[in-house]
Amino acid sequence: MRIGIISDIHSNLEALQAIYSKLEEAKVDRIVCLGDIVGYGPDPVACIDFLIDHKIKSIKGNHDVFAIDITRKLEWNMQKTAEIMILWSQKKIDQKRRDWLDKLPLQMKYAGIQMVHASMECVTGEYWPYILDQSTAQMHFYLQESRVAFCGHLHIPLLFSAADGNIKMQVLKRKKIPQKIAAKFLISVGSVGQPRDMDWRAAAAIYNTENNTIDSIRTEYDVDAVLAKFRRPGMPNVNPERIFRSRN
Image (cartoon, rainbow, N blue to C red; front, side, top):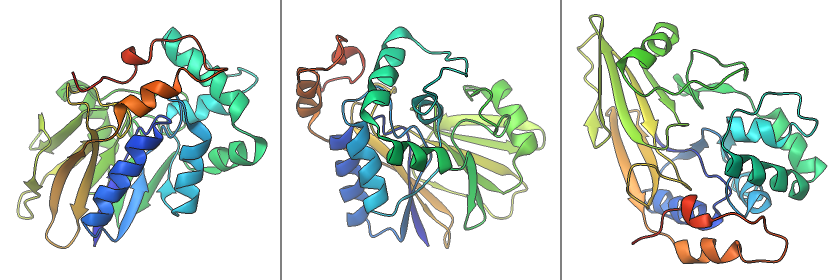
């Protein structure tokens, strides 16, 4: 089975459409989403509807949780721009779509593979740890039960491996998971809508469960069209160039 894995769409419809087409061209059998469907971008409703219409199995990310937290019961640990866009998104997302987001799980296991938005360190939504290095990966690997797991949240394609008490981290490229080595692997698939690795293109990963290979894929999309949407009437007064890096 070839599984296309996306994450951190962040209301970027153009990037979502482009990465979906790329995965379709690659003839994946199933696409799953690791959360942060909304937040930051100008099209929260359209991105939710896209996942629903295309039957993309999804989990919740922190921005999805905050988007349905209309009474501010949770502690929003985020930058001001992110908060402004969440508050604006709440006004756009109707009750039906809010209920859909609310019903999404915080983790899932698909084809024997664990999938989580941030880290297995916390899967209750109380906080959202970043796995940035060997130290912050340690608790995740302690709780990871499957040999291979996937996460989002970082917005950077990375591969972590744990074997013999040692944790290694490298940039995610094409990788064949060795079967004869007693090790666990965690793959951060990068971000569809808001990459943070100095590459503006939408990111995703493909995992082939038959030959145990992982491919990091990128695709271009119309960034200018996304930026132009921030000039629509009623949009918050934020600088979209700080949210979505242009091609320059």
